Image (cartoon, rainbow, N blue to C red; front, top):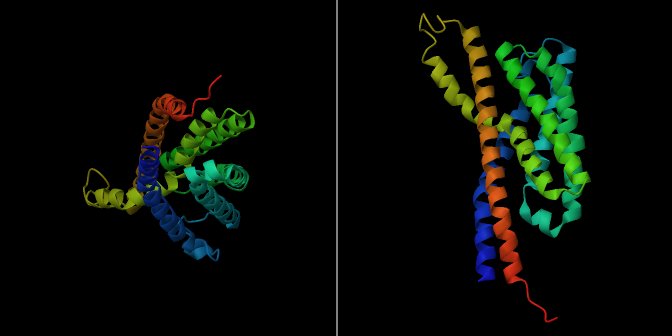
Length: 240
């Protein structure tokens, strides 16, 4: 029975981790192609200046570090079997990924030329990314590992907002294109449509990921007492 339970748990993990890994790696690689090598003319976001482009590139590459190292942190096998590797990967996630990307993201938000609504969504995302990252790091340092896991679920969901936004962007573009010639909606104004696509995609991805994170947090919170009880029942008893 324990072996069957363990096998079922591994299958459930693979059912969500493998699709997440495939989608994340593919979208990240596709996003990086416009910036390898860095070139102002291939940037997907029109840069306002050389400084803006340099900050944008730094933000994108450090975010990519966070995305990929976060995948490793999501792997239960690594946490259980190689805690030292888990800790060092976590340090890379924080100090080479989340924190530098979020800090560089502050001026990037200011320079973003896609409208105020898009800037606000990116600003909210950046603030939440920093705050949940600090909360998760503090919990780990204080050995509050249950709290650390909860905050990291929230933080990594914010890290993946860029992935979600790219996945839903084609749908948003289709919906906006259907109204582009409407004299009430856009009146054929491509700039207004572009700003609307950017802001709608960004806000929707942020909300969807936060909902998913809270669902996982609540599910984990409910499952933790049952898992502890199961471990206690399966532990061998020793005579006094």
